[in-house]
Amino acid sequence: MKETILGVQVNTENYDELIPKVFRNIEDKKKSLVVAINPEKLMKAKEDPGLKALLNRAEFQIPDGIGVIIASKLKKGSISSRITGIDMMDRIVREAARTGRAVFLYGAKPGVADKAAQQLKQTYPDLIVAGTQDGYESDTSKVLETINKAKPDILFVAMGSPKQEQWIEQHRDNLYPTLYQGVGGSFDVLAG
Ligand code: UDP
Image 1 (cartoon, rainbow, N blue to C red):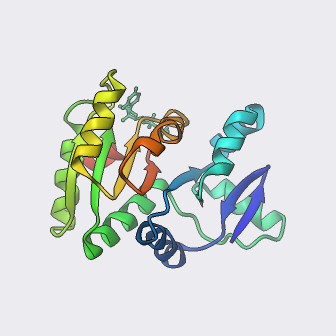
Image 2 (cartoon, helix red, strand yellow):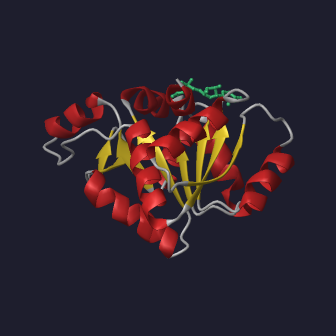
């Protein structure tokens, strides 16, 4: 279910309801994009119709940011709990480890995605990390090839918003993964 906040669609489900839906799309081989919606993005989208359309085209928009919850309450909506981008990533990784789905980490400065991957493996020993790639390689076809050769089911892209979402939308038809999430500075946080 979705609700419209300032012209942007936002999912109303909590984690436990959302994760099975997200993974069902992987099973059905239906490509999907998860974007985190926070007040900052809503303000940017208000000024930028292209960004608003891009956010609305995503298959899943999670309510990241307390402002989104408050906006929903004010219009008697049903979004009751915050889902942050990094928590959603954690839930997706946990489910990926449980179900044998491989993940790929793309973005952040050289070495950071690797470190983040090591941290995730420590938390979820069964996790399959298909590969990592820093976010500063300018040869896009090389990046696409690296990701496609690794054959991950899930691609996390950490290049800041909306750059990461634009990149995903531009290239996902040519990419192997089924599930995509733009995760901003999450690799830096995970790497510590
Ligand atoms: N980044 C990148 N390539 C770029 C620009 C940025 O990989 O060309 C990375 C940067 O190193 C950092 C992340 O993108 O890890 C941006 O994090 P930020 O916290 O700014 O994103 P936000 O969560 O605010 O969208």
